[in-house]
Image 1 (cartoon, one colour):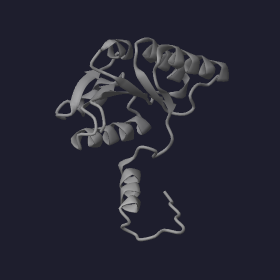
Image 2: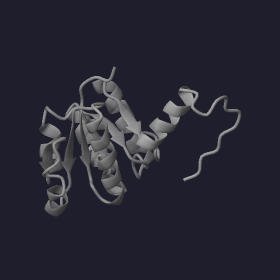
Image 3: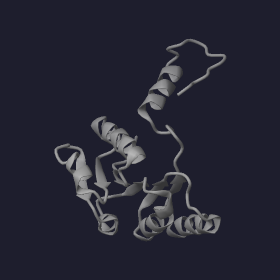
Image 4: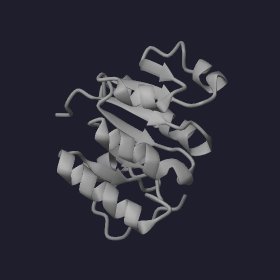
Length: 157
């Protein structure tokens, strides 16, 4: 059973907008409780104001990270900001899913790994479509033997 959890997405550009849609779908299915969205552009946030699964909207990621109702964050900002935002999130007690690249400097990536371990938090780097609903559904169909015995499978995007 999935534990109750609210996920915050920081950065809603091209990739972040896809990530928000995936989390909103998970919330609709009851897999997570709610979704918070943080972006510097108020007009982006306005597109989510009427969604019943949105629990928080913010233009200030520092304030966003201080909110105790957010359990974990998915960071989709520009690569140059990954380290700064992830470090602050880990310091604020948030689990972090960070889009790749983790940082623009490998020593900073090691620092984040050590910080997450020290704080007992999960730090994970995203992989394209790893948590997409289409992949979850494909896995479900395979596990349910919908296709029968599979000896070879190729997926193309």
